[in-house]
Length: 356
Image 1 (cartoon, rainbow, N blue to C red):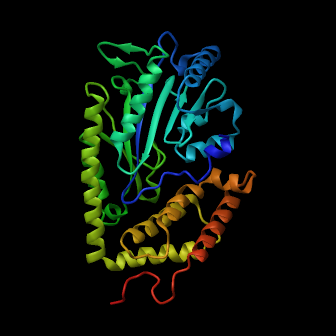
Image 2 (image 1 turned 120 degrees about the horizontal axis):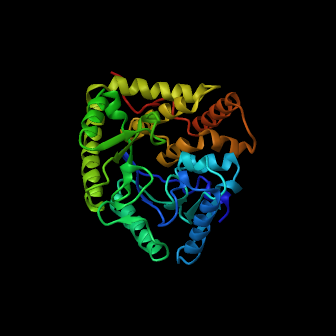
Image 3 (image 1 turned 90 degrees about the vertical axis):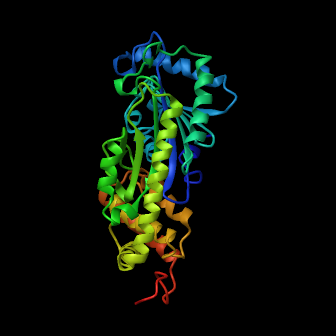
């Protein structure tokens, strides 16, 4: 599989309902080697070569790509598809990623830790993601010796990951709670029970498109099973709150839904310039409208693909050239207008809601 195969839009994770994807990350370090942020170039190269040997022996086929061999554009593409972190995208020789053929399993090497195993599954499926990551973790441990303390657990570069080294997270689409102005108290409540709320692209990012990542913050003193079950329980409750908020919106605030979807339809159909943040917010409204039966002439999968396809690196890949911010905004608007034209709704019932 080539790098072009890794960054194609065909295998993007697609899911129905508020839960977009579930992710398990396991942070591991190899004994007797300095952590990446303190390691020399020679040490990082040794760790990278060690990982190449380990993955060559695996039954599952992985494509290994060193960051130093990739263009900045290709790194950004992998980041926009959530295959690597923003930190790894900024690394060079000695750092890289191994990606399974179906893109549900990736292993980042010499990011913040020597090894970060990531399993990514559509919808709310933390247990399946954990099972997949855990299986690979066991396979790797047969080939390398992890830095481990009988008292503390797995030793990691960041103290907050010491213990299980696990970060479990779920990406959620929560426009109902946002429109009902209930998201802030929900976020405050979640933070009090040891969970973190972040934006679509992880730590330090805003919740563009009403996308939120909910993840655990505590890894020490809890088993992997406890972390997964606790997060799954809270997310399941949050999904029910979101569904309830959507029902109340449709019943009690129909005009709000009609207005928000109409604005999204109008701007996406006519805009000549549009930023990625604006586009995500309008696509979020169409996705909400689709889930409520308000908008009927769009395929949900096509809407979901656009969330990634309109990102800066993907636009430049499609044009096969570097583009200014203005050029990207123009091209993004062109793509969205063409999408709207292709899926033009009937004039009689554009929104699927009767007046009055």
